[in-house]
Amino acid sequence: MTEDKLHTESETAGEDSLLGGARALLEDGQTLIAAEIAFQKARAGFVLGRAKGILALAALALALLFFALMALVVGLLLALAPLIGPWGALAVVLLGLLGLTGLCLLGVIRRVRAVGRALKGRNGPA
Image 1 (cartoon, one colour):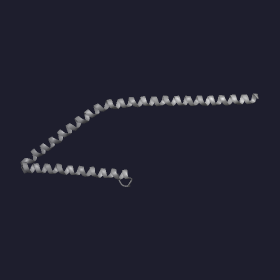
Image 2 (cartoon, rainbow, N blue to C red):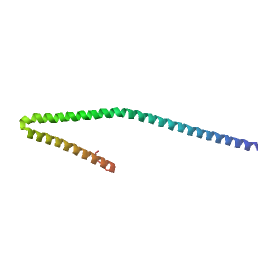
Image 3 (cartoon, helix red, strand yellow):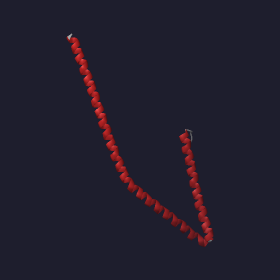
Image 4 (cartoon, rainbow, N blue to C red):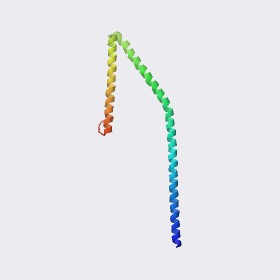
């Protein structure tokens, strides 16, 4: 009878240590999740803080690029006007800009179609 009692006590001790290990594992997992959430919040805060400056500089760069392109257009008009007249200069610059716009649109259409093919699973160059 004492053997049965020892056997039961050892089973109970094994279950207690297994249950204790499971609890410790669960607590470690909860601690790890809480730390990961805190890290990701800090990371997002850092990115958002830097994003304001990045967006401001990008907006300034785009505005300066716009003004540079406008200066180029006006310069072309002024340079071509004595050679082919003001209306001819306007036509040449306008047609040149429309041609470049068309090329850009063709590139956009080609890339959108490539993305559509990739999303549909069709093989082909991306």
